[in-house]
Image (cartoon, rainbow, N blue to C red; front, side):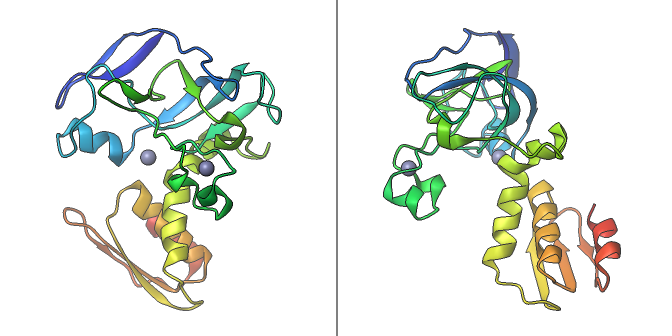
Length: 221
Ligand SMILES: [Zn+2]
Ligand SMILES: [Zn+2]
């Protein structure tokens, strides 16, 4: 299959790699329809984070269609439209039971292979998803493919940040960083009733005193 692989600092190669295969009864193979670029990809690309093996398939934000399933995955079917979280989770360890799925004891992050160990990413035609029964979700029919793609990291990370800030209706909040996750945090803050949202960025600064949700939405988007 074709994939985008890490080829060193500021080098991404579009090349042919082996197709992923079912390695475990809880795996799924997803045919990727849409994928996104994350700040996590950029850390590696710019050399701020090191350790990734050359040749690793990049990317951990994707949605698509299940084309193959391990024999123990019993809540999904071939042909299902699915979106994935950016890391895998088992659903039954202590952290998963507490809702802290990114701390799952079996967690792996898509697109991180180091010293030959890890999980290939999703900027590719196909991706292997371990613990598919808990890692993949079927988005509601009403959501478009593009909207579904946002659920795996961009929107969920921003919304989680806004929720963690315990914003009160009519309150004020400041968001540091105006990339896609920062913008989704602003949307999350507005959804929770924030009246004033200040968005701060080192190279692009927006300072809006927002009093109306619709105006706020326009300003943010
Ligand atoms: Zn991401
Ligand atoms: Zn777990």
